[in-house]
Image (tube, rainbow, N blue to C red; front, top):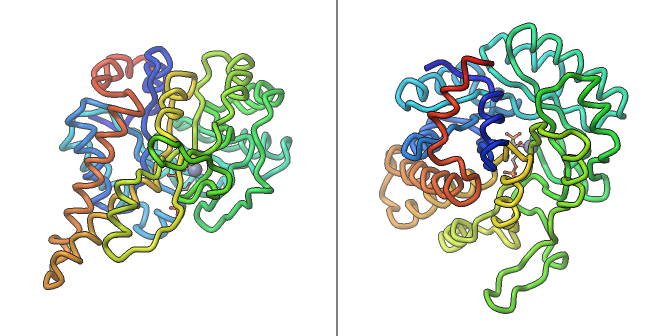
Length: 332
Ligand code: G3H
Ligand code: 13P
Ligand code: ZN
């Protein structure tokens, strides 16, 4: 099965009220953990590489790892560039065999974002590759770029129609209160649930999402910064020598609600990092005598698999949608 674009995935996700998980990959074990969970649940998956991942692993390794995953797991997979910083990086990924690229011009003024995005769309579409762009700015840290909470701003619904029609993009990432990283909210921004004792962050701005949906009906929306920062993995890390105080993510019920709307792609990276770290830390503390990397990396991979299966079933709702997507692929 070849790598596919996200077009059929998003069409099915939109119609079916679910979302496709876009998981960041940096090495073999992460690719394996994600795709083995997706294959067991007959779920499509988007594997995405940041500019930092390409620098760390070498883009060719990542492309071949993802191709290997395709060979051993019979599910639809798209290979996507996450947060492409410029035309040259997007072009390089398109030339490398990626089926989807994000050009992230969210920090540029509106008109410049349109111009730069359009340039990428022209090259991508000429090579049968789809493009995601972004309007509005998330807080948090992504690669070398850190956006302070006071510089972040929500997507303006009145801009989306012009942006989409002038650029020709295939999907749009929006800012409605998610943010990158494992520390998305300060504890003082949250309220403690009296029954569970869990700190609950402020709600995502579903009102803005609804307005955007009205402006660009049936258009696939993307949520970045959508890790839940699952307490189980944070606790394992902290119980095994780590120190992650006040790590807070987006509650899963809010992501589920988003997945039922026009949100067709949900980006998850921090949760993978936490799961991998939890497995490795737990192993090291239990087995200080081990020094074979296979012994301690495998538990990290196992937790990634467990995490991704949980996401597919509980948050994304993409279980058993692989066959329907494959049936549609030839039309796009
Ligand atoms: O949104 C950013 C992703 O979490 C990628 O992170 O740039 O450190 O690979 P990275
Ligand atoms: P998280 O940091 O919430 O996992 O977001 C990842 C992301 O948006 C990748 O583009
Ligand atoms: Zn992101």
